[in-house]
Amino acid sequence: GARRLLVAATDVVAWTIPSATVRAACVREPRLVGALVAVADGDAADVRELASELATLGFPQRLARLLLRLLARRGRATLRGEAMVDAVLTNEQLARMCGSQRPRVSTLMATWKRDGIIDTWKRRTVVLDTARLRDAAGLATPADARPADA
Image 1 (cartoon, rainbow, N blue to C red):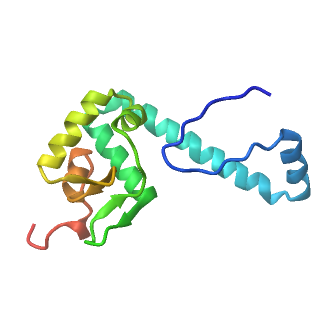
Image 2: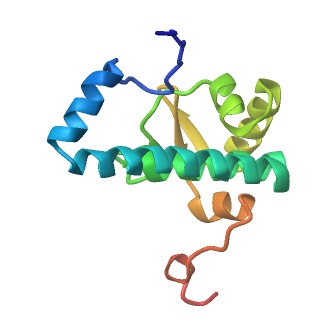
């Protein structure tokens, strides 16, 4: 079959399975069909979300939303309790993921770092102020995350 080059944002293990093998497995185990459809539907939802963002949002909002999605999927707490995207991503990769160019990502990330919204550690993004990043994304801060006197 045709070969395609894919570049992963994080370390992955991938297998190539012949379609005949997948069909035979689906016949033997019908629940596999539902699982495969769910994976494909999740990928399609990601594509629809990015297309919508490209059409309706400015670059800063797209980058902020990308960082928040990455945090939701690949986030973990640092030793100091901050939220870190546990993936090594270059600014070039981030630019491709949000439909922009590396210089724009570099400039905005530097601004957010200067403003105390994010930091970096071992080439990973650490979110220091999730509320301000959500604000940059154009998203409301959940009520339980707001200060009591707000």
